[in-house]
Length: 346
Image 1 (spheres, rainbow, N blue to C red):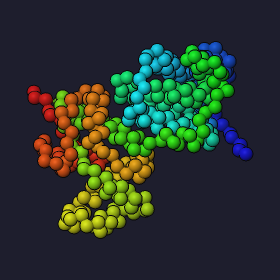
Image 2 (cartoon, rainbow, N blue to C red; image 1 turned 30 degrees about the vertical axis):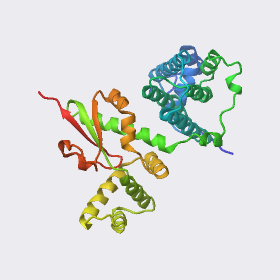
Image 3 (tube, rainbow, N blue to C red; image 1 turned 135 degrees about the vertical axis):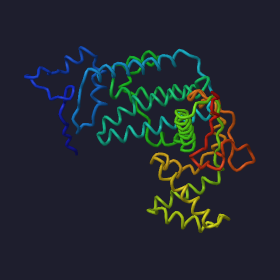
Image 4 (tube, rainbow, N blue to C red; image 1 turned 45 degrees about the horizontal axis):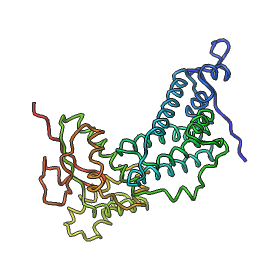
C-alpha cells in the first residue's frame, strides 16, 4: 500500500487564487484544449510529488504533439509496407521492448511524467529515426504502432481510441492487453541498439566539428575491434570500484607487447573514454561486448550523410595501411572515432 501526496498546481509559475484572478478549472481547460490535451499537459509537466506548473504554452504544446503523433500514424497507415526484417527493424523492435518495459517500471513506481515523456516523445522519436534509416518501412511498424497506441491510451484515451478504430480494429483499445514482460524481453537486442547509438554518436561528433571546420567531405577512422575487448575490461574494472591506478595495473598485466610507458598512455586514453560514457551505453557494452564500427558506419553511411549534410568519402580501420589525413589515424579509439573533414578552400 502507498500514500501519494501531490505538489501544488501552479498557473504560469504562480499559485492560483481569487485575488490574482488566475483560477483555472478542469472543465474550463477541457473546453479550451480537449480532454486528451489537458491530460497530456498535466502528465508530462511534473512528477506527482512535484509542483505542477500549468500554462497556455504547455497546453498548446500538448495539442501540437497529439496532432504530430496522429499524423505519423495516419501516414504509415496509407503507404505500402515491405516485409523484410533487417537491422533497422531489429532495432525498432528492441527499442519498442526496452521503452515499454521502462514505462511499466515508471508506472509501477508512480513516475507519471517519466512514463509520459517516454511514450509521447522518446517512442515517437524512435519511430521517426527508423523512418529516416530505411527507404521503405517494413510491416514491423504495425506491431510497433499496435503497442505504442495501447501505451498512448493510458494517458490520452480518446484520441487513441479514435486512431485505433481508424486503423480497422473493431475492439476497444481500453480492453486490449499490453505485452507480457517476458514476451518483451525476447525482442531486446543490445548489440543492435548499441550499433545505432554509435551511429548517433558519430552524427553528433561530425556536427560538432562542422561548427568549427566548414567542409563538404570527410573520412572517418575507426578503432580495430580488439580495442573493444580492452575497453570492456576497463569498464569491468571501474564497475568493480577501480579507478585509473587499478586500470593501469590491469592493462600492464595483460602483456600487450608495448613498453610500460605506452601501456600507461593507452590505459589513460581508454579510462577517459570509459568514464565519458553514459550509464545506458555502459550497460549495453557490458552486455554486447563490442561494436563492429567499420561495418556499422558502412551500413549507415547514407543516413549519416543525410543527418549531417556532409559526404563520407571513406571509413578506414586505423590499424590498416590507409591514407592518414591530418594525422588522425592514430587517434581513433573504441566509441571515439577520429574524423577528418576536408576544409573548404576560400
